[in-house]
Image (cartoon, rainbow, N blue to C red; front, side, top):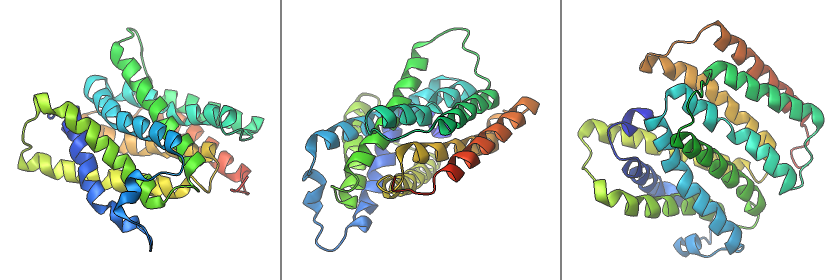
Length: 261
């Protein structure tokens, strides 16, 4: 996303990153499923909210990585798990034990130590990143609420369909045909997007929302691995933050044995 987002319009990146997975979405169709299930919903209002948030989250995150320094972008986008925990308590009425709450706070502080954000000047793009984090959190929460009432094919396919539709319209004014190298990056982006969305959709109906979100902190390890490709090298404080994040996540997972709670 960061590599290709600096060369192509963010809406164009989002469009191709959604259209390609949409082609493979029928792989999740079960016996009796129909293509029209994409627009036939049992809980239309929740589905509508989920699709709007999903359609907005990806282009907003592409803009974030394109406009903000790598560290600041990650610092803001990693607010998603914390937002999910807050929303799960108020919207889903899920119990968030005080120990888990402290562990989530520790994980978030660890993230700040890793990415070391320096918000000397508050820019409009910081609000874009916050909006992306909030939209991603809303997708997790609504997915939890409708995970047992909608077909899995519907949950997965509609996300890519709505995202492709919105970004396809917004990319028209600045559309440029991708080069061969850009097509390779777009394909890789689309493949990982499809796998991630599919796994998240499968997990959310069976696992408390805050536990799903806590697993997202593992992305910080991938961020550190990717950083050197963009000339960003971790320091001592970064590794201390990693220990805090990993330790907090292990504690969170060990505290929840009954995933149906």
